[in-house]
Each structure stands twice: as structure tokens, then as C-alpha cells.
Image (cartoon, rainbow, N blue to C red):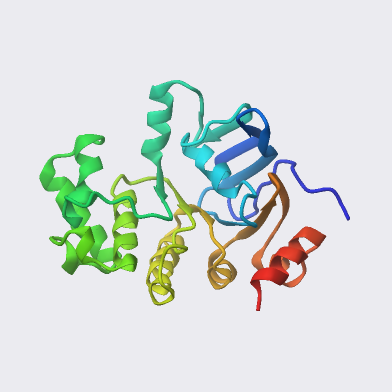
Length: 259
């Protein structure tokens, strides 16, 4: 078996690097080594799907891209801005990076429209009228314009996750991160969220998605990456990754998720 690949990787789909992670190391409580020198480059307009078993470090890794997780060694540069401990630096990166989580994290006391307009008004300093106009366009784009005046508790899980996507897009990010966005949904609601993500990918958005949705990865990803035990084990096009995996660890993982 060849050694896991941890060298800097780039894709042939684009030229302008949007995320450059080099030899990223992270420990929890100084004894759990969750990221072990992981390197990856994501280029403009590229869609990268990150897969791996539970505890592999994949969610931790993408959360370092907008400083939701710190790291101890290595470097991460996002849209030309190197992540540091400077709060202004972190704020600048977070304005360019939207994130959608497993849990929807919507404010239950605010309407759908208010949830989507909150950050543009407070962070981007947009006038309320502009924020609402953009929000309504985004709600239409994700197929829930008719739900604008409802509260999150009145929506299905799939509808709430589409609100969360619209909320992230309202900040007009250059990069979208998805951390297992369908894993908390009932099976019949998964498709509607994946359809929104497909549309977003086809628009040219740079995306990094942690997901086990094989159909989505086959159809939409430019590159699929496997992480295990804090290492980047293998990467390739969807066809290469699913049809002709090279590493034993990848073959084992795929045998567990492909039926």
C-alpha cells in the first residue's frame, strides 16, 4: 500500500486558487491529533466533495477554512487572505465564505425573511430594502419564496436547510462550505436540498462539501477526496475515485457506503 497523499493538491478545473491549505496540523487537548499535515488547494469554480469515516477530521478540516476551528501548525490562505488570530483578518475571510451546517441554526423567533436579511443588514451594512430584495430573490432561487413570512418551526427540515443556504448566499460569498448538510434530514427531504446545491455548483460557485451523498458526488464534484485518521488518503475525479480507487483505505470505505 502506498503512503497516504498529503502533498499540496490542485485541480485542472481552474487556475486561481481560492483555498490553499498547507501541512495543516491540529490537536485537541494536546493529545488527540485530529489533522496530520493535511494539504489541499481548491481553485475558483471547483466543487470538491470530502468523504471519510466518522472521526476522520473532515468536518474539522473544512471548519478551519473560515476559522471556526483553529489549527496549530501549517497555513491556510482563503481568497488571498492568510488566516491568522487577528479578528479583522478572520472577519474579512468570513465575509467571503458562506457555510451551511448539519443543523440549520436558524433563529426560531425570526421569520424566514428576517433570518436571511440579518447578516447583510448588520455585517454588510445594507439598507433594509436592499437586503429584503436580495433575500426574496434568493428564497425564490432555492424554491421557498412562498415561505418568506413563516417562522422556522413552521417549515420542514428540507425547507429549513434551504433557508440556511439562502442565508449563507445573502452575504454574497465567493466560497461555500457544506458540512454534511443532508445528514439530519429525512430521506425524502434530502433531494430538495441536493437539487439546490446542484444548481449552485452549476452557477460556478466554489464549493467544498463534506457529504456521503454518492450520487451528488458523482454528478457534481470535480474532485472527490477521502480523509481518514486525520490524513488525506486519496483524491481523484468522481469516476477515478468510485470506479478505480487506488488505496486500500479507500476501497474499504467505499465497500461500506456503496450498496
